[in-house]
Length: 309
Ligand code: PDD
Image (tube, rainbow, N blue to C red; front, side):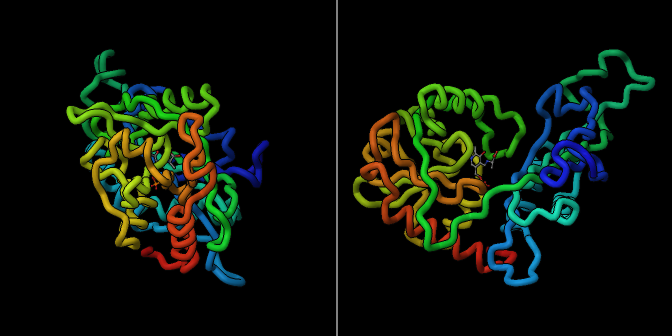
């Protein structure tokens, strides 16, 4: 595959690997016109593979299950397990060993022949569309090993203005983009979103991660899926399944601001320590002991190289 990113990025569109510059989809695709589609972001790593081992996707079956759920919510007919076949092709074709795979499925392009002009763009999708599948792989630094400190970020709070189905991993991310831009304008690296509810403002998640806090009373808690509209993140799920002291519940704005430790959870973030919130230091501006333990535990699970962590 040739192109300016040759050897660095490889793309995939509807069954074919291609250079990113050669990737083409129709602007009539409903993904482009309506954000009518879903996505996944997968980590590829050699951690735990040993000499002569192959790079692999972390927690592949959890990602397939979530993709199936998102596709189901939109009634887009596409076999989610195929994502791993495409991932394998991208890994082999790129020869990258530490990488991120972005993978999206949109509803497709309405066939225009013989249709009324308004069929070009109708909110109710015509039946029988063929989904458009687009993916790419790019390098990503290897996760730190368990001995090393977690990554860190400075965060700013922002209003969660998103819709009520953030459980769907939709490609419609304008609320996340606006919050991220606002946080960047305040000199922060990510936004932590606050959702107004009848019970007051509650923390929902990061603009690209899930959230967990060690409350002032020492309780380790991540917002429950039903406490605010959030994404059921794979990293959050792995940590919940492997840490009996991690509780799910309501994290109020007051809990967040008084927290001993604040952390962000995600495929790219792993367990990231929030060192500053709205300019004020959290845990004296460094990673706290529980954040370190969760991060080290996650690294160990990833390095175990089992498919079902
Ligand atoms: N972000 N919450 C939101 C809003 C996210 O966008 C993500 C992931 C997560 C964490 O989910 P997971 O553990 O499955 O990565 C939570 C991806 C990586 C992105 O859009 O870049």
